[in-house]
Image 1 (tube, rainbow over the protein chains, first blue to last red):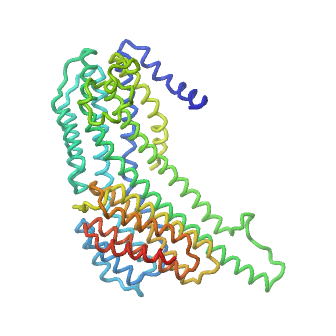
Image 2: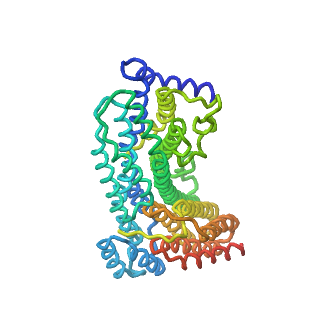
Image 3: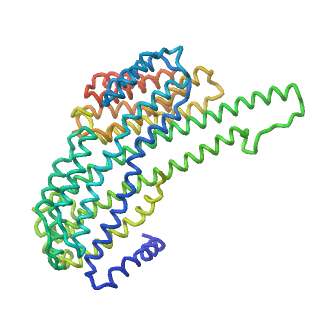
Length: 384
Length: 140
């Protein structure tokens, strides 16, 4: 890490360090609360990403070039539409396709069809959001446990159960991570805490972080392809967008060149109306629109990447917390991924000497808070 | 809504193949720009449409990947990845528009059958289309 980065990290840690050193409350528990609160900020932004799955499909369809609609296009569309799960949408599009004739079709017919096919993804955002909110609810329960509030997990269990059932219904799948979710449920459902001394909280946090670690690891692993798929959908949109504008600009440029050549040959001395960039005015306008659309797409891509990085940080945090807190290797499903100096792996070495529970919680919470912070800032740049 | 997927393809590999198809669409775009002045209007329009269909289908695959259940990775993944890798290798070598038309159409057929396979769990079409891409690529 270079000096500038270290300095930036040190500066960004000041509010957290002030927080954890300036109150009567236990600093380690405050650090845990700050960490879970920072991670939970992403829960407000993820719905924008989830909804953009559908929106990206619509935007991409709008960049499909207008023009010919061949019989092979119709055949492929018939096949594609026949697999749309939503019966009402399927029936509607099948009716439209039956009436479609290649030679009579509007030049916009193919684009319009692609646009309407996007409707099958209209509810995808909500389903994805429900699936991801499960993770944030889990994080919130960790934060609650580190607070001075009474913690009743029955409410959390209801929320988590509702989220997963809704995601399963909307996505139409039995969640592949059902085992992981069941593990988290089972653990939470058995923990109704009402007591509240700090030492008691620390012990429960340790139990919670270690006991849930395997299920949480699998669950975060399960969520990551959603975000990779989103980033790929944005790449598809980017290709359509670039192609649409660049070929429109090229066509305009070529037409203008031909026109100027024609005028030039018949009327010597006619001034050339081409900008210093070699583009005509209409082409310049298209060039600007392309740049604006690209910039928006770039912000969405950056936000998606930051969310993915945030998931990876949470996954690493989950592993390290568990490795540093577990008493026995048998408590962990991923002991082979623990750092070599983890107490649970090298119990007898000096390097692996176990820190007190409060120090471990505080050190790790601050470490991962600092890693999360820049990603959350980038994620907040996502624009609707 | 019910999505099914055979045990033949993982969510991650489906996304990777979608990314490769987008890359193919980009390469086709470069071909179009490079040969803009040499293509007839019909050739240009047809290739431009093929490019848009490739990119759109890749977007479909990505969205499908978000809706399906993660499954095990089996033999089919190797075949599909080989087809996309061969296609990427070949498309960079194509210099003639007719060859590009034939090849891009074969890749699109492959991408569309893959999308069908994801929703139906039937992979016969994609294996045939993938084999054709590999065969064509070998001649380029």
